[in-house]
Length: 188
Image 1 (tube, rainbow, N blue to C red):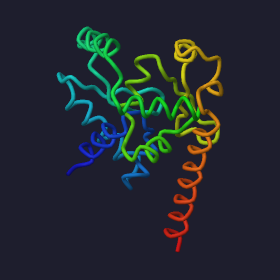
Image 2: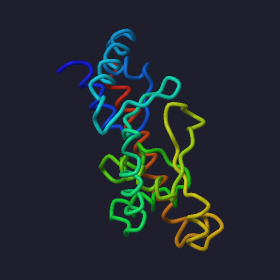
Image 3: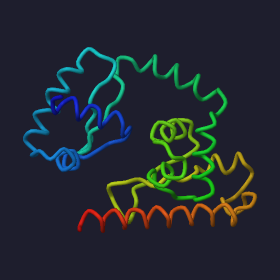
């Protein structure tokens, strides 16, 4: 499997932008190899439904601009249908935590939530901001429109807020402990 295929798979799986530097570190190759593979990938994606998008030093997969009408039609359909179980689970975590990373959402749900988060974002239910503790990741929050729709001024007004938030906080601590233990094991 060549480098360009690996990059494509990583970007597809992540479902969000990734820096050239992070790709280089993750794949254990130099920046020149990453740049060459990205150029090949751009070329191979020409004339297809997917394009490589770049903003500053971040790379992601996106839909081809010439298919925007089709994607817009799909988005409208998506916006009008009911939320899936995965969307409701994810939305509940975002609402009750009111500032949560994708890694914690994935840990709680036990599955990758990137596509679900993107769908909720497209529907205007959640928004993401850069994590002030780590600029390489995002924190997800409920939008004002969602809170307004639910008839609450803040997540603290949600039913059983303290109980649910405490449960999520406990799970977050478990995740942090697991990550610390993994770091200790890999440094030994």
